[in-house]
Image (cartoon, rainbow, N blue to C red; front, side):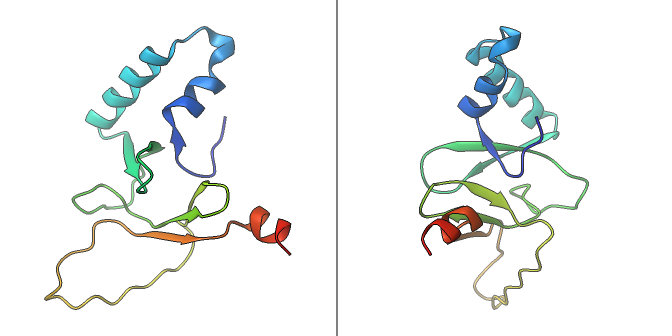
Amino acid sequence: MMATGPLTHLEIAASLVATDVDKSTVFRVLQDLISAGLARRLDVGDHTWRYERASSIPTGPSGHAHPHLLCVDCGSVTCLADAKVELKVPRAVGDIEEVILKGHCQPCREANR
């Protein structure tokens, strides 16, 4: 399975149903991958953790190297790793660790036309 964005624990577990791997094993493996620096956990503010593969891109303290788009219609989260998103935050404000943009994903935008 190749994901275009971070997946929830349940989405990952559902994709492995045919392999007889249970949800608790998936959760433990995800935690191990995070501890090993091979995966990242993302919280977009909806109280659902999503997981994505860690990349070789240097990251900040949160481990997130790229912004994400949260669709306000369907709740999908899309990685914007290839998109150029620039923010200019005054140094006095602090350091940005994570950027989550809210909007409409392409399928929802087309469906609402």
